[in-house]
Length: 168
Image (tube, rainbow, N blue to C red; front, top):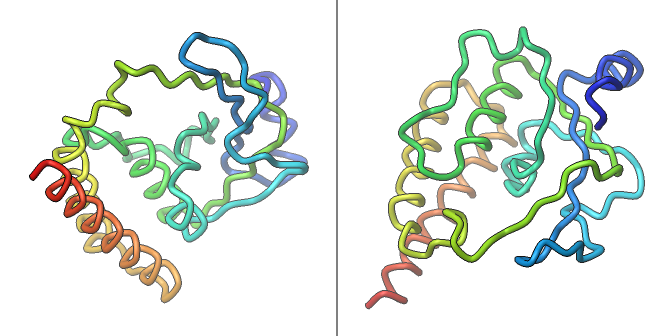
């Protein structure tokens, strides 16, 4: 999403949050030809869709400023802080995020980054579990969102057990 086009997109789509798909680069910085979502047209996501597809938090959304009032990144999180903030914005304001297929953001995952540091898995997973529990306790969740958050909690617990097994 080109920064100057965001107000036009917000107005035309009625979107609270806009983002573009991202183009994946290899470790050497070369474009792979793949995108995160592979969208052919724009799609709208709500909080349930985000919880069911947490990789959406890799996108770099532009958010209406007023939606961020009173919300900040949770500094206790080592990983998943974008997901956590975006989820709270979506729920607090019953907002929607429109994602466009255009790819203005290039994502390069390096071997030495925090997201690939396997020694960080345990604290990162524990932090995400704690954030999920705080979120579930802080909001009155609808049936589908409550179900999605419960499923996410079980998935994070399973991932934490997998770290235990692989390290043993």
